[in-house]
Length: 237
Length: 237
DNA sequence: GCAATAGTGTCTTTCAGACACTATATC
DNA sequence: GATATAGTGTCTGAAAGACACTATTGC
Image 1 (tube, rainbow over the protein chains, first blue to last red):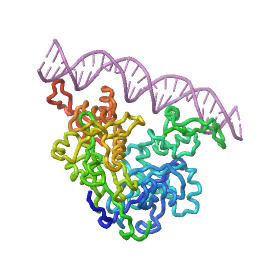
Image 2 (tube, chains in turn orange, purple, cyan, red):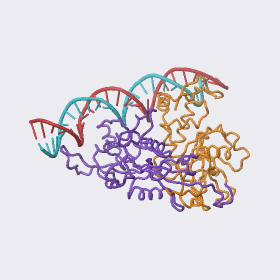
Image 3 (cartoon, helix red, strand yellow):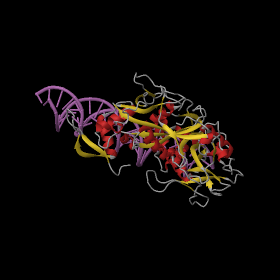
C-alpha cells in the first residue's frame, strides 16, 4: 500500500449498496423494483440503491436505503455479493455491494400504495440445477422485464444464494409473519426452489430441526380445518 | 441517485482487494500472510491486498494482486465478502472486497524462498458447529498471531465459507495437484472440517458424485501399496 | 354428511457410518 | 512373509419420498 493518503490521489470511485428486496407473494418469489427517473436507463426498472456515506458502515447503508427508498422499517438484511466491473455504470466507476432484504408479504402492505415508481415483480425461476435461462423479473404483461445496469446479474446471484442457504439457515422465516402455518412455510420453500415438496417429509424435517415451535393457536377465517400456528423459537439461530 | 457526477463531490473512499490465500500443508489449512513494512500495524501480519485500479474489474484486481504480492500465476479465485466498516483502516475510508485464493501446496514451492515478508501460517480451527473461539493463524511459536486491521474477521469468514461450500462444490480440488489420490482428497476435507471422516463412505460419495475419474496411473515412491491417481473430469463443474 | 384441508403411520428406498475384510505394493 | 496402506463388502441406522390413512373444521 502507498504511504501517502491524499484523497486527490484516488481515482473517482464510488461505492453504493443495492437491495434485492424479496418476498413471496401468491406463491411466487417477487422482487421490489424502482423505476429510474433519470438517465442512464431512464424509465427502466432497477434495484433500489444508494451511495454509501463517508462514515457509514455497509450494513448501515443497507438499512438506510431500506428506509429511504422503500419506506420500510425492518427487513432481514444480509450481504450478498459485490459487483464492480468498470463500465457497469456509464457515468463513472461504481462498485456496488448487493444486499438481500427479505420480508413477509404482509410487511409490504401499504408500502406500494401511490408509489408509481415502485413495483413488486414476480420472478420467473429456471428449474433448479438446470443450466437454462437466468432468473427474470416479470412485468405486468408476464414478459421478462430487462433491468438497468447489471441488475439482472445481481438478481440471479440473489436467487441462487437464497436457494443455497434455504435448507441450512433459518432464512425462510424472514419471508413469513411471526406466526405461520407449516403449509405457509412449505409454500415459501416451494416458491424459492421452484419445485413441489413432500408434505410429511417436509413437516418431519422442520420439526426435527427444532427451529420452530407450536403456539397452540390456530389459523382463523379458513373455510376448513384450521392449521396450527408456529413461531420461530426465541433461542433459535 | 444524484444527477451530477463530479468526482470532487465524492468523499475520499478507496476500494481494495484482499486475498485469503489458503492451502493445505501437513494436513492443516494454512494461510499466506504478509508482514507489514509501514504503519499502521507496522510489523504485524496481514492478508496480501492492494487497491483496485480505475479501469480494473474486481476479479482482475484479485488476479493482479496474486501475481504482484504472492508471485503466483494461478489460483482458484472466488469472491468472498466485502468489509467496509468506517475505521477499519485508521488512515481513510477503505472498503475491501475479500477473495479466496486456493492453491495446492506444491504450487507454493519456491514462492516463499527468500521472501522474509511472506509466511504460510497454519490455522487453528474451532470445532465445527461450536460457538467457541474464532479461527486463528498460528505463528512459529504455535501461538495465535494477531492480524492487522480486521483481517482476523476476514479469515474467519473465509474458513466458514470454505467449510460451507465443501460438500456441494468442487472447491476442494483447487487445493490439490492435477492428479491426486482419494486419500489426499480425504485429507483435504478433514483439514478443512477439522474432523476425521469415514473412509468407505467418503470414497463412495466422491465416486458417486462423478466429478473425478481414475487415471489408471498409480502413486510412486511410497513404501507400501500405491494408490490410484484420480483427476477432475474435464467436463466437471 | 360433504368438502377440503390438517396432520399422521408406515413402507420403501437411499445413503452415511461402522467395521471387518481382501488386495497389493515394498522390504 | 511381514508390514502398512489401498480398496471393498456388508450390516445397520437415519432420514427422505410415496401414499394412504385419520382428524377436524365450516357448511
